[in-house]
Image (cartoon, rainbow over all chains, first blue to last red; front, side):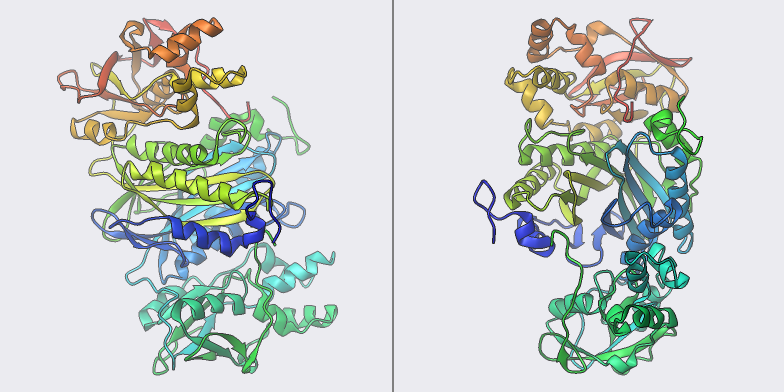
Length: 317
Length: 317
């Protein structure tokens, strides 16, 4: 561990999750906080009801590149990653706020096309932008907060030994698109487009909640990494069956072209905003959900019974 | 108006409010949006209740400077400007989310002290941080969303001819502190501290709502500029009586030292997060509220019957 001038660790030393742990240890809660930090969204009570809230901060060059994606796709994706967090609680998003920072010489049309992307993505769930803030900034910054409703929020902490693990949505497609763009290619188009603007399975979250999902999260850091969050929060072990995954043809194509096992995109890729959940073994899985593993006593995530090296994304690293 | 490569206006051409107007024209609403963009906070209905939401995006070098303010003060102020927006609706904040971007070499202690500032400011109203996001960024970015409750949100649009105008809290103190720091001085301490971490009158918002305030906003851009928002939204004219203001001694001191009329800090300064509201002339003003003007038919804001040149802050300009 390096030290800074003051002698203590930097946030780079702690890493994203280390810093978040230290912050969480420092904050209190009140009767309005039904569920605080640490899940896909918080669950808050107002004087007369309850709602979900989640937030994401996206920075140009780290979360998106203007030479890879147009403004409408960037808006769609910024909306999608927040709507997905509400989806991952089994909820339905109703409203978004958008903080927008940009250099003064940005064409106004860029900002308006980005907003068009936001509204287009929000239309999938019936949500709208309800407020925001605009400021000058050297690089484009997009700060999004999504709000929504859930009759019964599904947490990360409810998985039980004996449960089955299942997913809904795409896995690996956006990661294959990212690998494609990183190497200067522009096809396969389906993969590149999935990286630019993913299509989260918005119906699948509320369906899983209704079907009695015992835990759920969205795949934003990578499937194995995100299932690790469920395993930790639920104090269980999760084993995945590598033969159970449906590998989309463009993922296979990119794997072949780049000499990469396509399963790596599926297990490590994060930007598709698929959902992964656990269900009691008696539950009939809702349509669109595919069984991929099992929950047992223990800890950690394995693939075919073996520890799998994850490459889940961490900031500052 | 300059044009960019694409031939259209830049966001610098449109300015902050011009851009916001164009964005607002583009976004829709649904049954959950009781009050959308354009006031201090939006008012949202969940399936079983209602709540307020507001957001601010703060960027290092524009909204705060690490050489002028410590991390705890920066956290306090970032919280205050959002809690104040809920206050300005007559509401009480219950929860905040914080998006935090920072370079990897930032001492972790800086981030934790900032969070301590957030929690200390939130303690004034009983709110807590309920969620957030952390990302790497060249400059420090703080994106805050505040959530709260109001039995009867007070909008900017309800001022009526014949109403009186009143304010609660400090006016001009933070602006005098900013002028002090800008010239390389560190005193008067009260003014400098007010710039670093203002003290919004959190009790005054709900009190004004209970007393029947017809319109309200917080003073973030400058008193005359912010009253201009009420005048516009309510389609009325507002006249202020310059002799009615209580000029705090440090404001007078800074004015004298810098050769500036202290009334300029009072009328143009924004960072104290005072509240300004209108009340029916029969209303007994709640304690802490001072009458400063009147509402009439017409448009715009005057001081002693004369147009006053505002210097309300606009980004990109």
